[in-house]
Image (tube, rainbow, N blue to C red; front, side, top):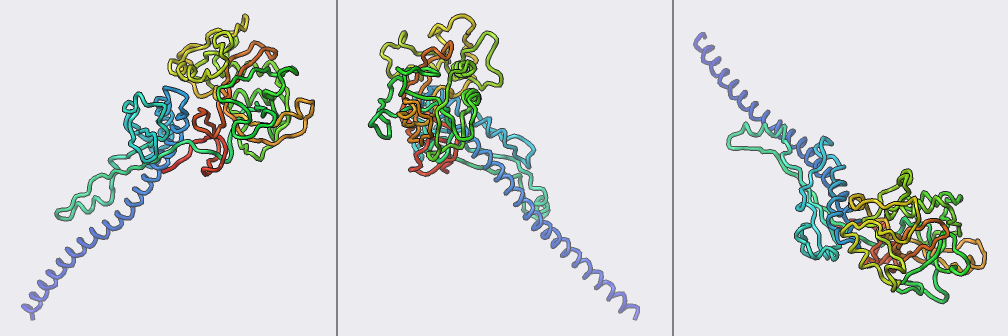
Length: 413
């Protein structure tokens, strides 16, 4: 009996050892499966974070592809990089990484060849699509490291990536300045009687002989004239559409002159207006003195943007005004190509005040600063705001090809 018990105990111990080994292997596998689930979830979060950053990057960069700035790819890369880095990755632990002149690329067509900023040199103004490609490397696979305990198995840190492509497309809602272009009698869309490049000369509060060119207007929700200053100094009124109706408003307010001029980097000696946005990439002004043709200064304007040329002193505003430096304009934005509504102003020219519907959206170039509301201000008509060749871009909700609103950044991939 004693021998039998000894043999039986040995068998039991051997069986127990085998069970222990099997349990250990199963435990490793079970932990591996648990780790797989957790780490796949970690990768999913990383992918989502990166996609958000890539989408923001592409949308921000696309806003610079107006065809109206020879330095637009530099601006696009700066905008895209800043937008991407504001999106945190790594479980919201760090900013997304963007490699300069590599991760943001450009193409003239959606399906075309994409080039880096430097690779597209000489063809900058034709670039209409931007692609942001972001990665997060060395994502730790924490619990999957258990699988490394199995013979011949190795789990290394993972890499996640995301890509987004954006361009400018017509909108269903948009932002615009409260300065309406008056359609010419008997005209119709898309240009309402204007030639692209045509100059329109007027004033903040135009006298009768200048009626019919453009009008200051009140958008829905803006009942008080002083609100014009905030709209002109900022991004205009947003959430507008072709269903909006407008009323005329006076622009004969000195504070409007300050914010109008600052868009060109022209300021009073006391400094820029409080809370003002940055000025345009260039403050170079166009008047009949330096542009006697009074037609199509746009090409020269694009070139002046490329060198961040400041205000050239035209017109003579008298004492108390000064120009900013080229460095200020280099850090500027798109502030002189402006979207505005097109309205039938005929009843307003006769003293009427009733609301008028928006007939369309125009793009115009702000030509010059003014000393006071009684000085002539010039606009150059650049075409319908939904035409990419106009150079205008604004903010709003994108629509389909037939949306008809001004161009806004939109994701296409």
